[in-house]
Every structure is written in C-alpha cells, then in structure tokens.
Length: 485
Image 1 (tube, rainbow, N blue to C red):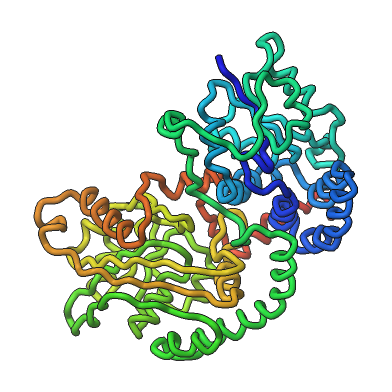
Image 2 (cartoon, rainbow, N blue to C red; image 1 turned 180 degrees about the horizontal axis):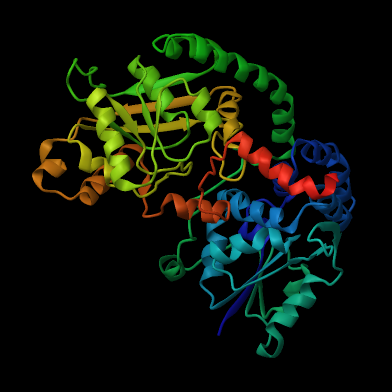
C-alpha cells in the first residue's frame, strides 16, 4: 500500500501564511476585540518569522485567538467557517498527486482542531497531524500547546508499516520529510493518468461566518477602518428603506453605493378579482422578497418559514408565516394568492454558495401561475446571512458593505404543460423550476435541505423558538428564584 504525507500550508494550500485563519477564528469565535488585538500584534508575529523564530509567532497567534475559547466554539468555527477559505486556497495539482495514494496523511503547524474536519471530509485524508491544543477541565482552551513534534507523531502513525512512500512539503528540510522514501517539493507534476483518476475534492456547499474575504493583515485593516463608516451607512440606508416609497428605493440606493440589476420583464399587477402570481425565488438573503418588491414597485407579501419575530416586525413588506403543517400552509398560501401576488422561496433557507437546495413541491400544488425569479447578490466585506449568529443583524451587515449589488432575473411564467395541470407531479414541477433557476445563475442543484444546512453549520435543526418575552422572563425568574432567598 502506497502512502503519502503532505504539509498543508504552502503545499496543499497555496499560501504558507496561517495568520488569516487565526484572524477568522478570532473574529468568529470571540469578536472584534481579539480580531483587532491580533492585527495589532501582526508586526511582531511577522518579525519572529523573519528572524527564524516561527514557533514563537505561532504560539502568539494561538494564545491571542484561542485562549479562553470553549472547545465547542472552536469546533463550530472549524466546521462552519474555515472550510470555505481553505478550499479557495487549495492547490489542485498538489491535491491530485496527494489523492492518488492509498494512505493519506496531512501535517500542519496549525492546531489540529482547526483543520481536521476539512482535511478528512473534503480532501479525504486518513490522518491529520498538527499542533495539539491544551484544554482545562471545563473545556476551555488554555492557549498553550503540547510539545511533541510533528515528525514523532508521523512516525507513530506508520509504526510497523514502514516509512511513508512519498513526502510533500515546501522544503526537503521539513522534519517529517526525512522519514519518507521519496521527497517532492513544488512545483508538483502529476501524470495524465493521475489527473484522470483523481477524485474531486468534496465541494463546500454550506458556509457560515460574516467575513467575505480571507482576512490577511491588509484586508483586516481595511475591515476595521471601514466598520464605523459602514455602520453609519447601514443606518442611513435602512432608514431610507423604511421611509421612502418602494418605487423610489432602486434609484436612491445608487446615491449611497447600492445597485439593483434587473433582467427580464416582470408580470403586471393582478387586476381586481383575479388571483395573483406566485414568484418562486432562489433564496440568497433575507432581503430577497424586499428587493423583489422594490423592483416591482409594490409591496408583495412573502412566505416565511422560520424568521425571528424582530425581523417580521421590522419587515417593510407583509409576511405570511408557515407552520410546517402541510394542509394548514397550503390553505394560507391559497388564501393569499386569492388576494394578489405572493413571493415564496422553496429552498426554505438561504445558501450563499453557488448551489441550490432542494425545492419543496408545495408551491406547485397550489397554482399554475408560477414565475421563477433568479435572485443573487454580491458584497465586498460582510455576508448578510448566518446560521450560528443573530439573524436580526443580517440586513445590517448587508447594508454595511460599500457597494452591495443585487441581481434580479425574471424568467417567463411556466407554460401550462410544465405545471401540475398537465398531470405532472409537484415534485417534478419543483425539480424543473430548480433546474431552470440553477441554469440561469450558473449554479448546481442539490438534494440538501434546510435541516442538512443547520446540522452541518450549527449542530441543530434550525427551528427557531418563538417564546414570548414574558415566557422567557418567567423562566429566568424560576431559574434564579432559589438563590434570591
């Protein structure tokens, strides 16, 4: 059995600098203070690299970004946030060579907990050797690490199996390279047969976190300098959105850096007494129905699955809450369509990557007047969706971006022969609409659902509890009552 040991930084990943990944953990697991503190220490960390004291620089990054952070939170960031940034930096030629071996081991100087999930699930590695963090008995990182070396742990993995067949690293002087029968350094050359037979890395379909770009030192500085301006700009944009008529918003948004690109021809408003059109949209952010209404120059109610009460209260358009009880929801949608147009996002949740989740077939059962709408957006600094954070801030982060852009593409209304009236099943109609929208956006269709997304990113089913404020306060009083006497 042929085996390979590959360095992660600078080999499987193009960039050998790990600073940006620690910045991501600092921002997502702890917040702005650690993010800023680690950036302030960047010159010192850089200096230790230059003078050959890289281990000290690594320990500084580990301590500042991870000390005092719960193990569960580090695992959550490693599961939901980091894989996207690792995948964007993947060296495909190195990956093809790495994946052509039977036993695959990855060595990294980063804490193993930060990379293990990505490397095993997406790069299909069998083992990961990295820096081992220390945790106290309460499950919090102490900021210190174990002292054993990477070469010792690589030797322990192979044990009686003998030396690894191939070692891949930036330099032949890497500690584990001396254990390998063959050694290879960049540039990597793969045989044509290896390129044909190599599996593709498992794509990152679900991604969380607020930062759009990998926070290198320069990018992090830009983010920190922009934040005060972005907050003020977001307040202005949101205030204008609440006060101005819908037909004015697309024009005024250009004055404050926003842009809405409209393609296709939307259908006219329904005449009095006629049933409305069902706009079936891809779901990129909570702003989708609001942007669609602004483009249509009228308030079109939107079906909601599981948004917070605060979002509903602040919404500038009417919302129709579904119960997830099929017959009850069907009656709600029919009733609303009898009054006029309606917006539905059959994915049931947002997906920021170029994939469409499985479409629910409920909408196809209720009307033949279906207009698919391809929604997409582009932002520079901050994502406008979250699975782990507070969803009430999603619109704020969207409007904090310097130049947020929304693209709205109206497709033709489905012909009768493509609807349930022609004998097609709701499942077939939903799949057809999904493929149509995916083709328009250049996305891929998947069978993943809302539940899959939240289980991967947040470790739950994504069901929001809508207990009232009074109920929450009563529960809090009952909890602390024994300590008040």
